[in-house]
Length: 420
Ligand SMILES: Cc1ncc(COP(=O)(O)O)c(C=O)c1O
Image 1 (cartoon, rainbow, N blue to C red):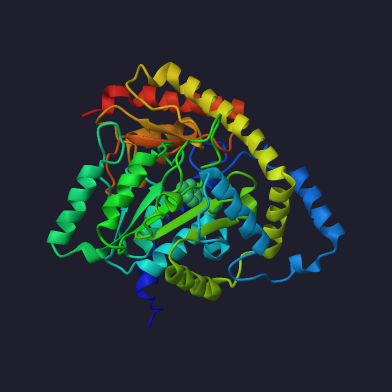
Image 2 (cartoon, rainbow, N blue to C red):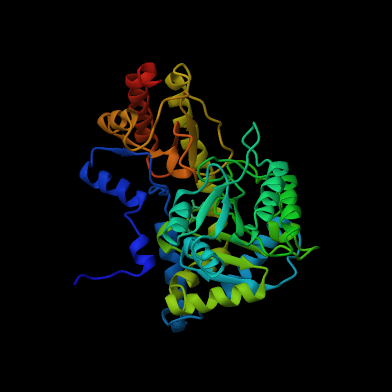
């Protein structure tokens, strides 16, 4: 007799990110453009120490006690106000529909878990956040790419036709949600225009609230110079209230990743109640002390001051990597767009040059001493195979330039030799 796993347990395999981390541990000489870690140098250690002292001086011992399942009320209020300010409108549902999660990753998991059974479908962008794809796979949910136009934007005419085809085939009940990363996306760096988001909502409304919209706004505040002008789907849908909208964002990437606190907002009361029931079973509340640190950081303006530091730092890092790669890769037929926010460059290699874990290019990159995320991991269907995600989050400027040089060396070595 051996241990028999549940169907959920049996479906699990080592995650791609764990595989990348194993390689990093085996080869400490490697420079990593792979992990979506944030910049060590700018983590606000001294500032947070002061916040901790202030909390201590206030003498409120309850910050070290368990908190509420749905989260610290002050933090929920601060975040709901903040998001409404970003949208320039009242969201209408109040803070009742908000909750705090253990990173936005947990919020996303709860949203999927309460909606989707194995065999259901979630429509995702091409490319999309690869850990979200892993999560869907783990839950037995099928990820299907949204149709894209020639410029890489969502083709909403084709989306309407796609949903009609599911309906005709009697399969529309399987389609549970559309997942959009609408600001400086991981990995594409793109933003989704207001018109596009509005069109997606209009198309989903034809299905009378049976298909939800997940809006993942993890990088919304991580613009370099100015915020992208598009309201959230919560704001855009508030006049109609047909499509259930789940909005998530994070307090980790724009501040201190180690605090691992996320924020969710769900316009659908019953859906939210079910998410909270599962959260109650998982952890009955996110770390209360971390929430208190974040509420104080938001309240005192520290959070915003720090964002100013991060925006300048990530802009400089993006430029450094972009320039370093540009010198060589352009000539070799690679291309990419410079993002206006976020942590990633999304590279397209020449047609036919594969970048997957088993490819000659990947081997050459590891040999040269640099890691990246193969682009196929970020695609629901595993294609195209000639893309790469480079994260400039964690390395310092000099290391980034070195990593860029190593990446170029691999590209030179493989060059057109591998192109079929
Ligand atoms: C698009 C996106 N969403 C969500 C997350 C989850 O972040 P966290 O759990 O730290 O809030 C990440 C992290 O990389 C991400 O890139």
